[in-house]
Amino acid sequence: MEHIANPLHALEEWIRVLKDQGLLVLVLPHKDGTFDNRRPVTTLKHLVEDFEQKRSEADLTHLDEILRLHDLDRDPGAGDFEAFKKRSQDNFRNRALHHHVFDTQLALDVVHHVGLQILSVEVFRPYDIFVIAQKHAHKGIVRNEEFVDKQRAPKWTSPFPSDRSASVEGGSRP
Image (cartoon, rainbow, N blue to C red; front, side, top):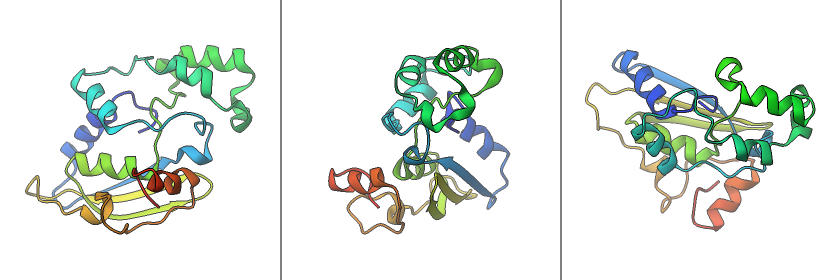
């Protein structure tokens, strides 16, 4: 989903073709372990706005931020800055950009937002967030509080510093 300009639209389509009780497995890169480590985590509000504005896959809204904050030391395949910039400007063809930046809480919030039942979340170094979710026959019948309610003790743990520091600031937690 990080390579998709409008991830909620993509999820809507994936859910549309998923059978009732079918499972969706998402594997997302956690910002702390990737070249996105300097970028802020995308907000759910931003993803909803992209969905409502019908953001297309040709979108380069985040290009300036990416060029400014991309950690080239963690992306040796990108080459030098000029090569990276050229590749990034042609993103519609090569699909290399991470339009959005994820931490564990955002991944869970997105899955909850689209109405899937979260069954499991696992977070591993160097940069993986795994979420297994299920489509219910009756939309809206999901109980994800143990994963997304920030007032409850979390059902997941994370090795990533930004997940732990967000819990101190009142955001997502370990």
